Length: 353
Image (cartoon, rainbow, N blue to C red; front, side, top):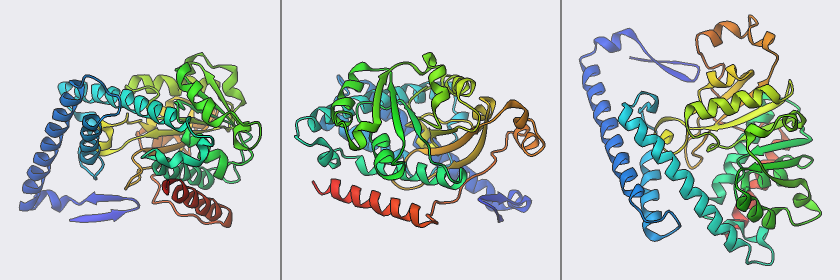
């Protein structure tokens, strides 16, 4: 029997006594095993490619991979065998490399236009960025009421910083964005497309080549920091980055972290909310979207250590519980509804090209 509690389905004790339960579990285990086998095969095929630059074969393999990973799945990638865990980590790094090459290719293509920003829809996944950025803004607006940041950092912006652009143009019109990436070539491409103008959105977007580990006093200037999904590709790397942010961000500043859930954890790293709490943050929301938005979103707020051990948070955190799992997002104010309408118009316009 199933019981619904908040956003969780609970298995009642009689379920485990049902003759069907072992059958269902066996079927589920077979389904998970088949999925892992399929993904392992795709990983091997991708690793054998001579290049990860855009090509029909690269596109076909990654399309198959995404198609396999996006549907809801009961797989728990944190419990994979050591062999499959190594496969998953290698696959995430392949995805990162391929994503970088895809974005560099389209950044160069867009740069050939007189007005590149009029042609962003030529990137095949631009609408995904529009929807993900809208989701992140809506979660911030819901869980950090009245937020109106003056300065925002985006760590891991890449050659096509669509997220920063959409947020700056349609959700945070008064904020200045500092985009950080390890790759100088990626920043040069981004600067040509988004930072060339001296007015409008371009005037509010700056690009810096730096390792987040080398940022200290700079981090204290930001009201919100966005952490890209592929900054820190292993769990320990991600936890280290979050701890560094927590050591240097100011109290009250917000952190937005991109994560993954279920089989989508074969595409992107999964962030444990406990690692965020240990990084001196209070976790405000964890949202696992469905549909074309692949990344999960975690919203947190920097707090002093004394608050983390307070009675309102201490017990739940000590048990490793997630403070909040958000329901599907819906806009509740005219301002937010207007932002939604504008972003949808933008996506429709860009995708028309």
